[in-house]
Image 1 (cartoon, rainbow, N blue to C red):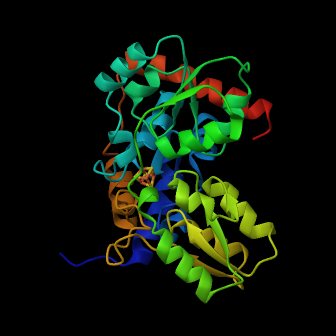
Image 2: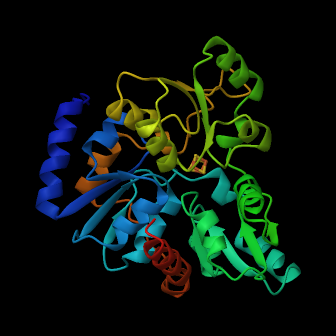
Length: 317
Ligand code: SF4
């Protein structure tokens, strides 16, 4: 069968969106062409807020499964579609409910804060969700003596622990993209580009965080490059964000931080990149694959996400 052009898919997606009252929410780690057709592009926090407050009947989630699940949990009456069901997340997969229940039992009496990069089952076991945009503030919003259990990203957990000095036990999970950045290669790039600033996501390992000029969530890194005076950045997070950075400041230079294995293209999340324009077209046309969450789990998982959104709204995040 003859392959249709990108223009065809894009114009059909626009037509079907209007016809079906659908919106496309895209994460910053999607490819530039997908970001450009989305109704809203953002990080996990902004996308959760958007999923909770919109008038669409259908949400097409250009991202990974836990994000689409979060949208379904927040808007159970809507149809939520994920263009490729294989778009998972190594970090979410590192925390299985059966193991997490044991971890909670082994560490009783703690408030359970879990990163939004988790399955619906893990959210259902949690007290508050967080994202990298608000993790520090969520922890700081709790009484000083409150004991905390944080999961699943150990690097973000250690970053939050260092920033807040709170009593936190941390699950040992990592993201395969953010733990792969090579400190050696970043320092070599810095030598070649002495004016460049190293900007780093808190999911990165401590040695990489230690050489950072700025550490922040994906949206915080974007904001930094918009307002900062430097004209070159070494970007240690998923390279998809560079599309937005270039849009706001096309005159600046953005260098994706290389991975330990120079042949692997490690600065790209292979799960995020499973979504394509063609798959978005197919899923909007067929209204499939649809994300469904068991109602019992969904109701329990609503509580921590809503609490996160309430605290974030209160703090103006
Ligand atoms: S970048 Fe890491 S945390 Fe984000 S979806 Fe990919 S594997 Fe998961």
